[in-house]
Amino acid sequence: MYAVRHDKKAGPVKSIPSMKKLILPILMGVVCTSFTVVPPANSPATVPEVSNVHANNPTDNTAAATLYCNADLEQAGLSRTAFEYAWKGYQYLLQQNKITRTDLLTICDFSQSSGQKRFYIIDMNKGALLTNTYVAHGKNSGGEYANKFSNTPESLQSSLGFYVTQQTYQGEHGLSLRVNGLEPGFNDNAFARSIVIHGAAYVDAARAKYGMFMGRSFGCPALPQNESSRIIQKIKNGSCLFIYHPSKDYLQRSKILNG
Image (cartoon, rainbow, N blue to C red; front, top):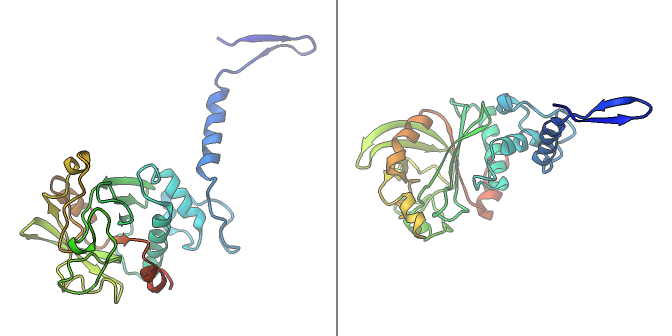
């Protein structure tokens, strides 16, 4: 029932209790887009639709900011910086026809503790976060935090940069996924080093619960054993994988990020 107030000149006026419902989405929209980077002069003036966000101008930072917000990536722990680098490289690879599955973008954010869920699968068509879980880094890359990276065989270190997923196979860790490193000098030895995505018993939520950092691999991005098969099946055969760390050497010399 509407509340009624009386105005001597205008007569009874009905107030609308649902006005809060109208105002709230507007305020949410302002908060959501408040960090948006101003796009270059040649970028579209309107904010692209998230449902088709990957098909827009790759230099349009508004599209990246919109997806980052709508997918709640900040709440999931993925830094905006890591996502923007991933977005930039993903758009470059789209232009170069290096990835055949354009619907997914997978990010390993190795700037985070291994005790955090730092593995993200993003649906680029729907603008939604599909998976957020734990992932191990290489044994010689560090303890709780990764801080050393290598492309050298037998280094037992993780390799930074962009990859494209390939076929699956059954190995000593069960179902595993080969990845092809796309960046010379940083990860193009992935195949020779047998760097693959696989499950591992030393990566699980129990370690995080008790304040332990994850076990470490020989350089592979290893996933929780009970999730690995589902994830591998989801991202196999041509999707984009980005392993991130704020390493100045990589960020300054990556041809994909600086192309």
